[in-house]
Length: 327
Image (cartoon, rainbow, N blue to C red; front, side, top):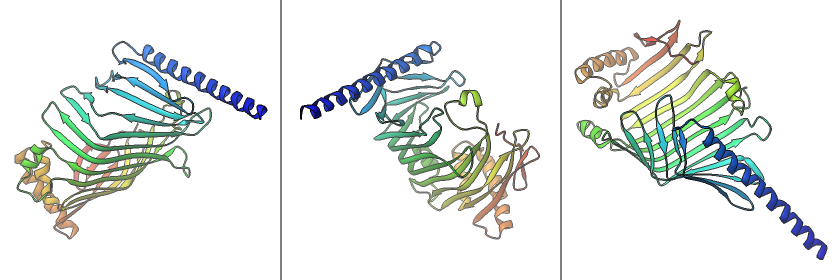
């Protein structure tokens, strides 16, 4: 009995020592990372690791991060990252309500019921990305520019495609989107409901190198984007897309994406209300869409192909200019 007790005490001591060493290493690494950033680009009010004996619970209080290229700043009351002591390659992060995103012309506050993310890496020296999942519930975005958007649920995910090298499957599912009240007032004459039903995307993205700890050296570039299915549902307005783009030798996109819009007559008013087209252009756009619908044989459905070839991009018969550069 004494031998078993001694073994148990020794194992507990060893495990506690492992946790303490790991916790101190994590805390030191995070503190060092903040200290190494250029002045004004990253700060916090405290770093702590708890969770003994089975978890590493990292809490960064009042983090502030700034992107020097865009000038965008993100800050939050706190940020938390969790990992089980026996599975440190699986991270879970939680973000609170009360985040703020500062842009060049506005500040967007992010209130939420729940935002949680999961990052799963392959154990090993390279720590290659396996999958990510981010879930958000009860999100309300409010801008100092005067707009406000609500989202019931949103899920964003990526998963490594083991059948193709350096390829990941991408997913997006957003439901219950409440557009800004001003937009809905501008669309009062339409039959669009107060909530968008969904935004859904299922796609694949291929890169030139693995997404792992060496990305700073390998600099993976996007060379393939397959849109397996994309759809937006807002009452009688239904949008769907499918196709693929690849990077040519010059890095410019080449390929086709087929677009389908049901209930398209509401589209010009939406684009005008969003300020994407001038109100006096909306009737011209409506006539152009009507011609496209007639060519497809169904006056209530527009079917058109977005094509990238020879460095140029076109939407059906309409030239749009240079093709986008994938890298």
